[in-house]
Length: 83
Figure 1: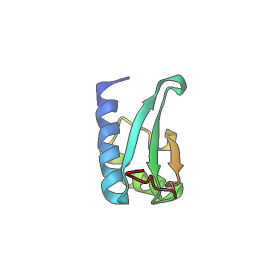
Figure 2 (figure 1 turned 45 degrees about the vertical axis):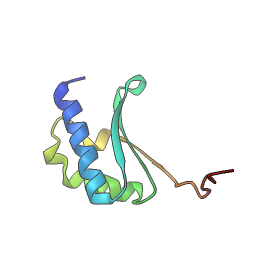
Figure 3 (figure 1 turned 120 degrees about the vertical axis):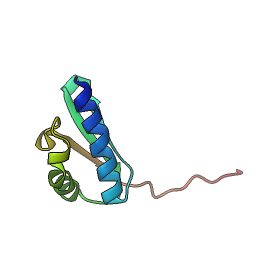
């Protein structure tokens, strides 16, 4: 895994977080030898793919078409404090 790819993964994470309004992480998943994009709530997978495609030139070491997209739904229950 190259340092440039790692740097581009961090850059894409920052771009997607800023543009989507939800915290997004792009991390390397060694067993599959690929990068995963993970976020909770907010944009759909298609919307996140579109955002990434718009910024593909800014992250040349990553193939944005070869990323795994993993969106989870936000938890509906909130922990109750003080109980």
